Length: 52
Image (cartoon, rainbow, N blue to C red; front, side, top):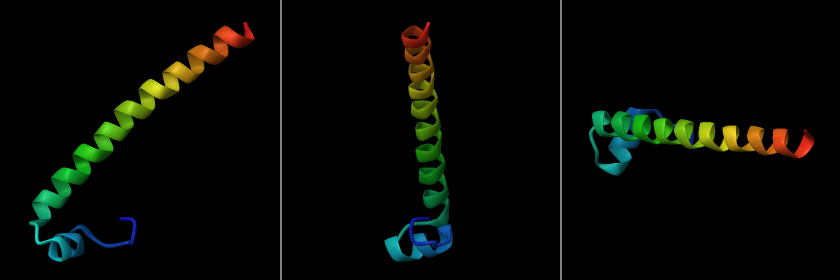
């Protein structure tokens, strides 16, 4: 994705199946969403504490 490659192109370059690329990408995006949502909630709570 960084180099605008499709999952199929990534799989070919890395010697993986396209399914492995899809699964790994899905897990990475899910992990980022979870971590970002926790960080966002912490940031909101800190702002509420500071400004109230």
